[in-house]
Length: 133
Image (cartoon, rainbow, N blue to C red; front, side):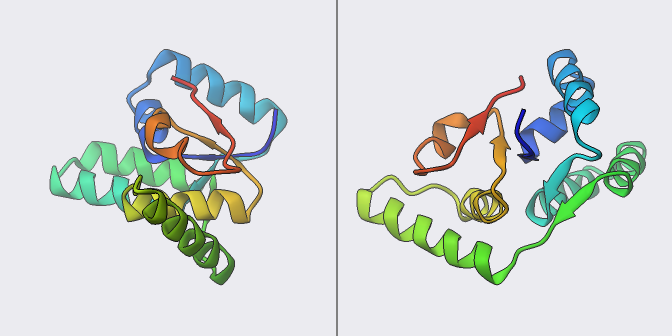
């Protein structure tokens, strides 16, 4: 198993106790000390929970974040993201900027991206994907 960055959809599945995802998280944590999420994923989940005024889920999410690793946007990840954007736009297969930024963080940290959204992310060269759903 390689170190991984967990995408927003997969963390959402985990927080909703999806059995396959929970099982994969347990296996991952036997080998690695924490789950990696990006600051972008933090924003996506936090904004959704605040919009829904979901206090109980917010508390669970904050607890999850406190015991795991949040990776920032860096100059390196932005440069990689800009390259991804240019390549996808030139090929006419552009995806959302948020997904490009998450991919840039994964690539700059040499992490596998764990996502159920493989249709978008598989367009990105050299990005290794896993789907724990």
